[in-house]
Image (cartoon, rainbow, N blue to C red; front, side, top):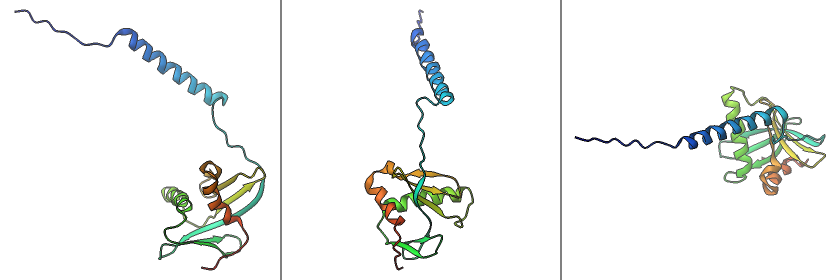
Length: 152
């Protein structure tokens, strides 16, 4: 009885090519980390305008934005509106919860001299370049820099 067993194997040259590709990838990644070539760095400019803010959820679903310095109400985000602001703040609040940090430390909203708008979580050190999300979403935060105070 003749039993022939045929093995399906990957050609040797394919394995060498995959190993070379993996090695080259690791080499380029390591080189980029060491030299900084090909990596993204967010440049910072001097602050032209800034405001420290607290965000508080209300029972009716609204979010109240307070000025950390004066304590006055900056804006009230009605339920079902301002999805971008709510989403960003939800993510930052979640990160604070993971690090077991409370809401005592305000968030810093800064417009630099280069007109770049950033939101900094002063408790975790996380900085979000709001310009990366487009002008409409940036404007949602930019209006919180204005000096006018809203009523709750």
